[in-house]
Amino acid sequence: MVANGVKCLVDHSQNEDLLKPIQAEEVKQALFQMHPDKAPETDGVRPSFYETHWDIVGRNIIQFFCAFFDTWIFPTSSNDTNLVLIPKKKSFFSMSDLCPIALCNVSYKVASKIGFCKDYAGIFTEMLEKKICVGQSLLYVWYASYIESKGKLYEAQMVYQMGIMRNAEPIDWLKKAQALFLDRMSNLVNDSSLEKIDVGQAIQSEDSRLNPWSSSIIKDLLTRINSQIVNFDGYRSSNKAYSGKEAISHQNFSRNKIIDIGGRKYQIKGRAGQGGFAQVYKACIYSNPDEIVALKIQMPAFPWEFYMYRQLDQRISAEERSKFGFAERLHVYSDCSILVCDYLANGTLQDAINSYVVIGKSMEEVLCMYYTIEMLHMLETLHGVGIIHGDFKPDNLLIRYSRDDLVEDGFIDRNSSWRHQGLCLVDWGRGIDLTLFPDDIEFSGDCRTSGFRCIQMQQNKPWKFQASLRLLSLIYTL
Image 1 (cartoon, rainbow, N blue to C red):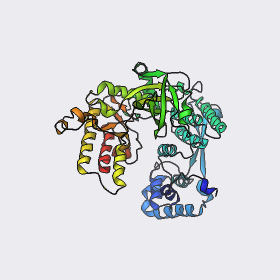
Image 2: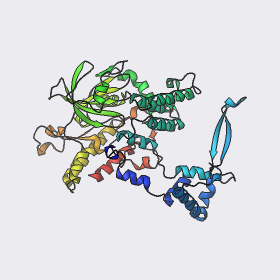
Image 3: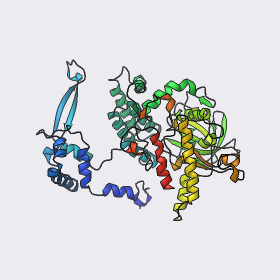
């Protein structure tokens, strides 16, 4: 009876992945991804030995680890560890000047890598989107600790803050973990505030490969362009927390609830979408059914998307502007931001694709060609003005229908009613403004959109406009 009342958050396919036996290829992959000179055994044998002589020792290595995962018996000597003291500075006089590290051996490191995905960020985002353990503080401490180990201090602080804002339990333990994190950071800076850590120098450095979606890069860019953002039409800010956030972000929010945002009354009509860091609501301005907008609530505050919308206003011609969505205003609070956007009620391109899938049919060829031409034209327009969308996928392409009758004469030039027919690209949170970077910039980083990643991202190679080649995957999906 109790089990029947527990909501299942792990689907069947995920459970199968967790339970499937270890494969030989997983063992080999775990070993070969290690640096050849890392993690020496106590006898001095390094990964390079196993990699070089894999054709000889490979079968024994695979049998050893498969036996371990079948029996969970690990020979005692296999986790022997070398402890080494690394100086923190050139001249050291006490133990506090030394940093102890444990050099695990090859066997232990391979065992720890087998069966584990390296895409921790993707797993964390997926857990947030599917609401798996989002109320447990361990989720946020786990991921914050991981990205701290990668040197991403600002991102780690944001993860701790996210968990605290969501009142993850036990909240006292989460706050203590954050306090310990800030104490560790105090060894790097003169006080525990992350504001003192200069993470933005990468843009001015000689490194021509940057992750445009890194929190530290975005933070630095927002600092540089803050004077522009605050002067944009529709920008409103407050040093206080938004008092009405809980009323609409709570899972049991009431439909038709009236909320006040910046002196304007909005009647909530329902939730239009939800991601790992933002929620989108359909709302009527002053309860007027003819004035419908989308309210995108994001924690913590994120003005970057508003900046991208204003760049579209300035760079895209009036004839093409309706293809890329509109943002009317942005309300920035100390704990969140609320973006007020146009609302389109015709669904997404993904919805259109699914409508064919459920009846076992494919989209008509002429319609596929039409949408393909639309998307190619949109990308050509964006790239021509130095903008990359960064998350080009069917979920972010809304369908537009013209209110007027369509005539054949205006199709080629997109004149008359055809101007309001087609697709509308939204969700500019991952948008890239190339004018903020050097002309010869090449990017690194992964959009982590399953099925729509360009080959450069998959192979960890530099990319720029190649990010939009995910359009090919989209065309194939059609």
